[in-house]
Image 1 (cartoon, one colour):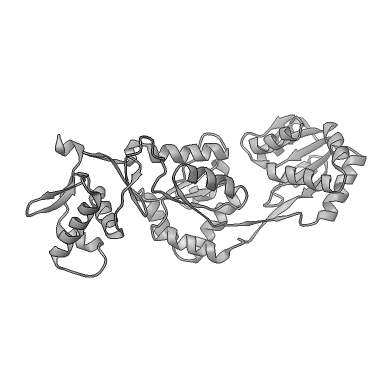
Image 2 (image 1 turned 180 degrees about the vertical axis):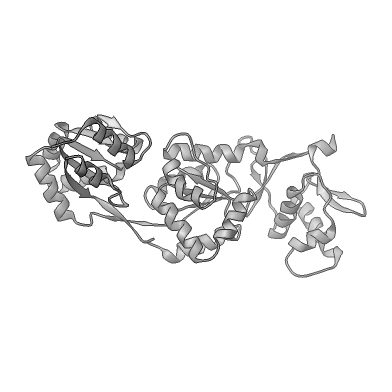
Length: 373
């Protein structure tokens, strides 16, 4: 066997993001996962580009006191639009004269990548924290430009206006419907059928839209049951993204830092954890949605063999009767011989690996370490 097999080998992961989906999918694939992308929402860029350019010209002519940056992708797109219109040098000069505040680390990263320095960052990644901070400092008679995030205004404009500021908003992009609604629906139905090991989310609006689609297809209960049974991992990029999933009782995995890299690391650590494996005499067995691995090496078994292993792994070390195995095998045979044939074929595909043990006149069990000792 390969001395260093990829940790995510055998896993099937659903990516629900449109933005940076290629980066996330590629990183997961390099670690062995099979990845499918089905965006829950689309991004409609530069909805009113003439208005954005006109407001950028106003900012250049009369620099603001404060510029609020809510998203990294929105800020970067704003600069790209200004560059295409020949306004970038003037816009950058105007931004250097203003206090720039950022809503979270991704917004800060985009500001720094542009050669600018944020004055303050809302680490909670919420507009509410931004508003509280600015109002507490005092914004009376201040000119403030807000680059809005994809979900539109969330009360920040009203809070700052009520505190005496003159606010101008910049709409760079908005969330729109999924670019592939049928692909989204199919992926959700497959998730509910237990065909994915993990679903990843990188924005709260996309998480909310995905949950709404699951409800519309009457499968949210099935997905909740899979999560509760530890057969499905729901992973998010941070606590803001996790909020709709928590409300929907999907118990998301949330990394310590709100970054894409932290999300990938959290998923890798989850699937490398020995607590999610069964220790058999030949190694660590992991049964996934569509494959099984031994020490992260994918086993060459059939769908029927996979279901046999799944049932045995659900009761590690315990004897499973032939009649119980018949329940998970295709068809409706009541002949115990059908279970014997399925186990024989599984053993044949496993070769010399000692995974399944026969208990005479009773059934089968996994050959787990504590039993073999």
